Amino acid sequence: MIDLIPRMVIVASDARETAYWEAWEEAYIDNEAGGLGMWVREKATMTGRRWRRALLGRKSLKGFLHAECRDYLADYAPLVRQELKLWEKTGIHNDLLERSRDANVIIHQDKIYLSHGAERARLIPTYHALIQRVRLRVKLPDMVIPLNPGDSPLALLRKEISPPTPIFSFCKTRNYSDIMLPNIIEGDVFVRPKAKRAFRPNSRAGPKDKRMPKAVWRGSTGGFGGLEKGRAALLNLGMSRPDLIDSGVLDWDYERYGPDEGRLKEKMEFGHQVDKYKYLVWVPGNCASVRLALQLASDAAVLKIESPELEWYYPLLKPYQHYIPMVANESWVNLEEVIGWAEAHQEEVAKIVENATAFAVRYLSAQGRDCYFLQLLHEYHKLQRDKVKLGSNVEYTPEWSCC
Image (cartoon, rainbow, N blue to C red; front, side, top):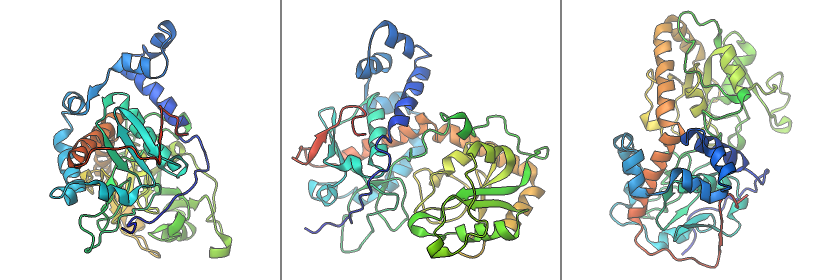
């Protein structure tokens, strides 16, 4: 059978992508343990897996969902059902999993294995770190998890292919069968270095907000997508209407686009953006832009360009409740109209920001994302019809050994 998933392996520029997550895990577990994590490690001389299990224990997947995620199950059930509905009748057999065998995580007898060489693919270390981290608290059943190594969806829906290929990605559009897992590429929105932190539980939004009444956007030229999906329009507007938006990119292809004419700008730390401006613009990237979680957790209003790209939590978001919608194409964006509305409705903007922060605290916290991911894995595991077997093209990966 011919492979139905195109190969897209991108070698990571930083071979230790999970180093950040090791530090994140230390802080998270110390918090869960009431600050006793360091004491246990020092006094009991426990290291690695031993002290983590001593602090938190490990429940079965079903037991963890029942004990730790009860308040999320009803919210996540329709999201999970939507992601897996294409395999409800047929289940997932090994022949489907064989279609995408280059970047698989295999869980077998409480150990995690990776397809040989998969750790060198761009996003696989990040996804692998997520799986290893939830495994610290949960005994995961045997299963095969095919992973998308890039940030564009891979499994295009085709009428002649039924059921489609299952593959886990952080983003997709409706014409792909990719199964969306939580994106942790930007790390945790609440555990970040001070310069990058923008979580503000006490919002400044509202009639007394003293920040500049304009929008800000920093990004790139869009990777594979170039300046599409509104990026060019935002950059051009930043040149002609600096009173509306401070926009700029951190990279520029002079051969492709010619002189930057001021569009190329220095990096502005996210925390500084939030402290200076009232409004943050969200624009899609190669697929979705992972920045939205950070923006929702800030106390600036999010101006979100409406687009077909999806991350796992987008169906829970509502316009004018969690963000202010915008419309854009390659040459036009209705930013002036949107900011005009926002400035005339500052009380409503303050409520939108309050709702967005509450949304982030509930769904985009470590607990919220873990519960979605584990509920997804629980239902996905039910669909796997064949016994998991280890082939010759796999490597055992103890905790954090992938990078």
